[in-house]
Image 1 (tube, rainbow, N blue to C red):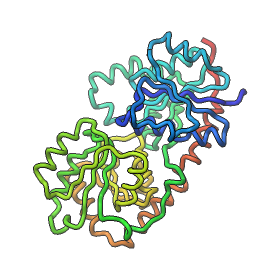
Image 2 (cartoon, rainbow, N blue to C red):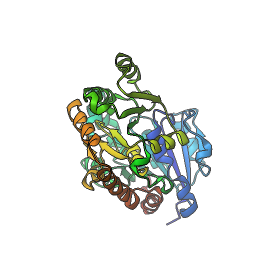
Image 3 (tube, rainbow, N blue to C red):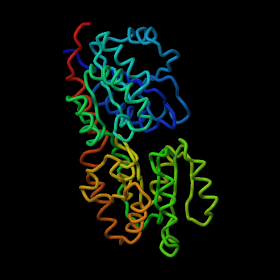
Image 4 (cartoon, rainbow, N blue to C red):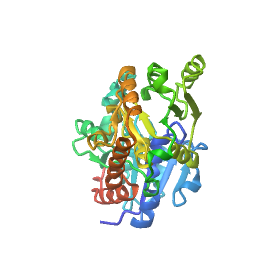
Length: 369
């Protein structure tokens, strides 16, 4: 079998709102190139300021002017299917259609939905998604060379539709695994994610305000992220409660994000649904104690005793916040150490790239159509 030399990654939108997906798709680019001789490409119809080429020096990019079938065929004709894989990221948009076209042209195709087929996500606009899933999306994806899950619960759910689905998780870079102690950090809880209603940022703010002033006065809730529909509601809530101890920082990337992670003690994400949130892995690796919901799809962290279940409603979020506030330094340090050990053993991009290269290299070529 010819060696795998290139991965063409198809992403609908390379923007701050879609940061989690496109960044996870590109995170192994340098490792794949340097240690496995595989070149990564990022193809999309849109690139905004959140994508900086200097962050991915070994990555090739291509902005797509047209998304029709002829444009796909013309682009794929530039590459050799015997040394190239096409990887589509997300659902419902052109990457799935283009992946199917690539398959017909003799390429191997890896389909990665990134949590978009999780039960909660499928219930949103179900009247629209469900028919399209069974009539189009599933029919195309079922023909792919590999369906990839990025988290264990997602993998278990995908197996119901795609029996050969494979788990290859998201992670962080080894350099971002920072050992530090609580006593050097501010008494802050950090929410760092898109301001989308599924992330439950408004229930979090309301739960925060329900905590007694006497307990809450020594802590801050810092909220950072790109607006995806909830910013106006959050700012209105903060205006109504100016002494709440809630701070809104807006979008944070790069060194500013690393500085923010270094300053806070706890990370909280009471999300309704995720594929696998890299932000939780980043926070745990940076030494924060994560408070996450089951919807975050990271039960391994809770099972390892490296995090707390914060639930998804105001009552459970409030209880988790108060419990964290009462933790001693030694208790917090112990949980953080367990979280970091888990990340170091299983969730480093350097390790994940090896599994990715091995799995993709072993894929069978499609039958001639």
